[in-house]
Image 1: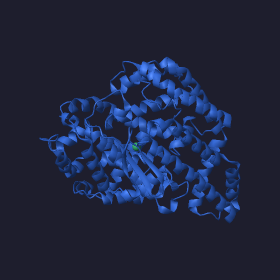
Image 2: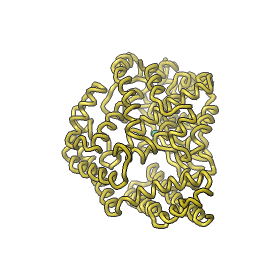
Image 3: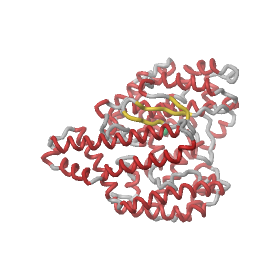
Image 4: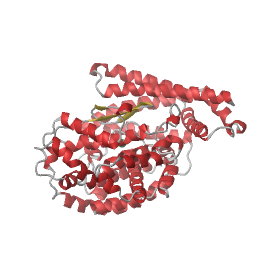
Length: 496
Ligand code: ZN
């Protein structure tokens, strides 16, 4: 038994090494690599990534998995190795069931479509992208047939990003969230119009914003010996290997909340990665449990800590010390109200906490219907506009600010959007459970005692990495399965 397990672990370490190398190259590309080297760099990253996928799909991996799954061998495996073998089996099957020429065709098609999408968005001309999208949807449906599915065909796509999640669960939790938040939207916007927020858009020098971002990360318990903070165009967090989880942010000089919220958000992702159990290093389990669970950690810090009144009672004076002129006449409560304004808008990435989920639910409903063959690509613009009108009360003037706003569909990513709202739901549910375990959580935040909160999350979520499913984690951390009520109650209390 020793032998296949040994060889399996070595193969996995090799796969991880490729992933780490890709991450270094990607981080460098996004944080200051010379522009003229970008094209060649992208090609190198693509080459390494296809080598990594070959290892996952390799005959060697197939043989090792079959040997390890032999009942006599399997029963002697420890729990972590079993989880790892299951994870490898999932990824291996997903790769080998698509013929290589189909896979190549899909990669070429989507990269072409992404280029066409830029032009279509600029010209607000859905007709340019439509033929590509039709082919992408057709191929996606073909892949689902090859992968197989239980229940709704969309389940297979969800499972890539959120293992175990199904349309049955999403229809129920998203339906409930939609029914309870749509009626809040107009009233919240009404009230937000009275809130003064002009001071957020004064000139805030980048060097001082950076100073505050560094301070914020230290307060959250981010370990600078296992990471660093850099600047980029679109903020992200990336893990380059055990002991190296990096945060990036962007300082907009006329929008102080952008960098603040981005840094706290990406910092929440980084705390997850920095606190994975060391024994998971070099395995396939050294990762977040799912996209939704990862997003729950970033949103927990960004929304439930970093956008709360107790937080700003503690930290507003520090911010005002750095920006005395810009924040003259503003207090913690005024700052809190300004950063929490809500108004329905057309663009997802600019949406506030209340309306964001409705942008996601619209995409989910359309993707699900496309994949099931219930609607055609040609119907998308009209359905999109009708849903925006019904849920948010706003209608795009053209497709550039409507159905063409996101690149995801041109890139062939279906099933990914729902993880954003799942992240918000998990985060609200975790906050509810934290309040039960730590009744003085608001007092602690107001005193800047964030370490016990970070430790609570590490104990219940971070350390397990991918060794538990999202469903197992949320049940054990909170005592119940995914429950949309916690997010709904939070949004009602804040915006109702
Ligand atoms: Zn995120």
